Amino acid sequence: MKSKQDFPRHPQPRTPASPLRRQLLAASALGVASGRLFAQEFPSRPIVLTVPFAAGGTADVTARRLAEVLAKVLNVSVVVDNKPSAGAFVATSHVARATKDGHTLLFSTNNALALNPFIYRNLPYKPQDLTPVSLVSRQAFALNASVHAPFSTLTEFVRWAKSQSNGVQMGTTGIGTTTHILGEWIAQEVGFKLDIVPYKGVSQSTIDLIAGRIPIQMDGIASAAKLHRAGKSRVIAAMGEARAGLPDGVPNFRDGGYPELVAYADFGVLAPTGTPDAIVQRLHRAVAAAVNQPDFRDGLAANGETAVASASPVDYGERIARERARWERIVKPMNLQLD
Image (cartoon, rainbow, N blue to C red; front, side, top):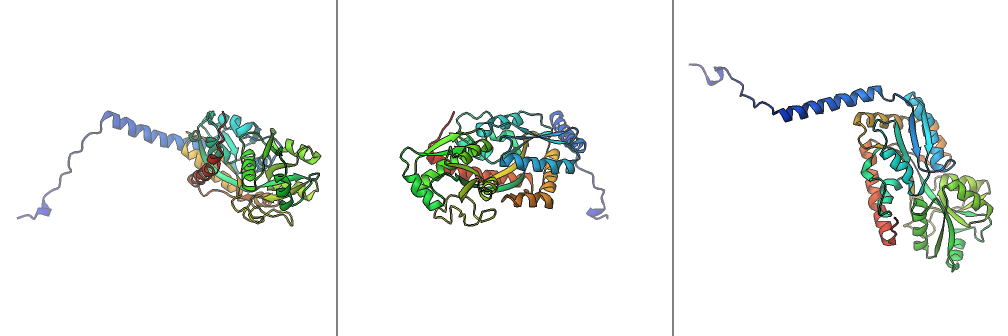
């Protein structure tokens, strides 16, 4: 007698896939194959790196440095396109609506996705319209003062600012921008009245700061420290946690008794949502390779900016989510809602 194991085993009949399931499976396979094909052919023309700030500012300088190195990594021209506007609306909306093929990218700070949703009632784009590629760099913000102002230290500034009943004029890159929110935050923490003076870009407010037409402005530590060392302006305090890039004798707000006042500009690259994942991954590898080049890192470090590439697009997305939660806690008590 044959054992049970000796009898032939017949496969169980399989239920035929429905026409809809077959279509979905085919579409999925085609999508994966198409994404790989797009990635192999990418880039097929020059890449445009859209910057929501005016030429000459910190973001523009960093974007142009990145474009130069990225062009060598990808072996294609990378062009910087400045589209300055309040809230970074014009550049962000432009990229959100761009063709989803990786050739039009956004180089922006974290305000577009992490800050704007808590300030503007009617954003012309949705945060989910953009997909993270990689962080590029970060630098602390700084409170920069005119050399003509009647103060030269943080202690002197606090005393003077509190005495200004009509408010302290501060140059920012526009109502609702990160520099505006930082000014409001500093004014609340220190205890003085703020009078915002909006400009189209940091370079324009710097002209008036140097001339003494405004007493203070918000700026990135990279450009603020450069002006400080040249004797054209004076850094009162920085918003970083470390002393990297700070001129001698200049404190962080944390050192000066305001531990909550910590803020960085995180510069990163984003693509229109819907860009094939294979292309997003290719872009991430290229950006990471560019950021990790010694010349790029050293060039940024010389001005107090730290080059940082994300481990992956997902890692960068999680960083933006953490920043969004942090800024929500800071901004909501301000009751600042703009149209």
